[in-house]
Length: 536
Image 1 (cartoon, rainbow, N blue to C red):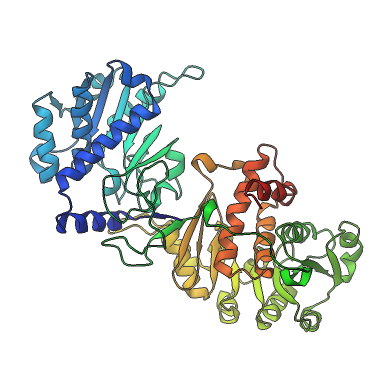
Image 2 (cartoon, rainbow, N blue to C red):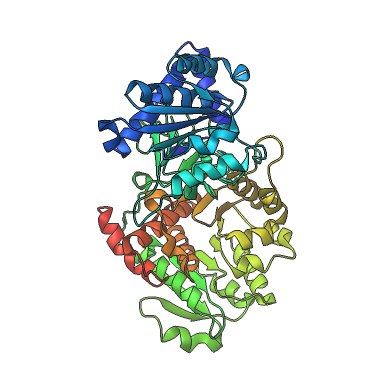
């Protein structure tokens, strides 16, 4: 899996390389600038052929130094280049100052914000090298004039399919946190983000994917590099091992196709487990039926729906391969679980918020089977989440969306919602890891940026963004199918973290395979096509 880094981890990797004598900071800056120019010409080959006009926006730190390198290289290519420096050139870091002086030998640097609109008139390309990964608190001092002019250059000439000047961000679009993806102040509308060595968390969390149409990673010659999408460096596997300057296990993994193994081995149905999924009452069984269909399609050997007596005919007339069992109350569940072949449970979808739901959840957890808790099985504990936490065990997977997360982890959600004012911002990754540690089990925090963590601190992101954007998943019942996918994999013997990661990736892949018009019922039925594409 590709590893995603925080800004501090990236700085640690660079500093370790510099201190070892492997490279200098100035060399890294030069490589970064060359990587940006290379990415520009790869994305827009027509810009390579003739001269054009570029405006390069440089900030007060090393990201600005990268921008000066880009400006010099484009100028040497024959372009007309205008450079704007936001900040005092006398206060630039040493390496950035060297590249500022190199640029000055070729062209002027504009410092007057009042001339900015004139400077931004009709550029062919805008380079955003203002802050990069260095922005961690709300952007209050960047004048609205600056932000408005950049946005006008990018969108002011929009006619039909033709945009105005594309904006290329160096490392991170201005206005976004590289650690959280949070909006820190009117993010620029970026067509291409070029980052270095490895993707950062903010590229995949919250607003990060929405701020850039495309993300490219360029290698800058650092050792121990994660395999970057679109880059050329060799992969380093293992969730953080082998990254100089970064403690083992502290990185976050991006879930990818080659890390999945869902091939089905075994000679009879019971070798693939028996999943038990509880339904709600009459008129409320649909969510559980969706989950059951997902569990069966993903390979569980048998799936049984347990429903109240009043809902028996509703369930029985709508299923075929899935079995049906009446169940009324927690004592009935305890008796049913005397069958040890029932090795994976799913509770929550459509169960309702009555007292029976809480009793059923606690009875299921006492049986110590692999268990998925979703929807109502979580919300029911909003007033007393500690009762749930006391009963959970390490073979559980919680699958909250943002609202459910807020109900059972209100203090953690409050930290996630709070604006950053000092130090590193608190991200969805931090929140999910803290929640998993508190719950003592795996937590899958749903969203386009689904974050999965277990009680040991292992963490991964399933991103439905960039070339895996799947907005069709925003439909009723899709989360119920995901819960079923996880349950089916648990029944097959997958460990909780692996089951959650695999299910989340396949969930997105089914949406991509089906495309527009998707409804929840389509997700399980698309799995066979996805499996064939995986060569199973």
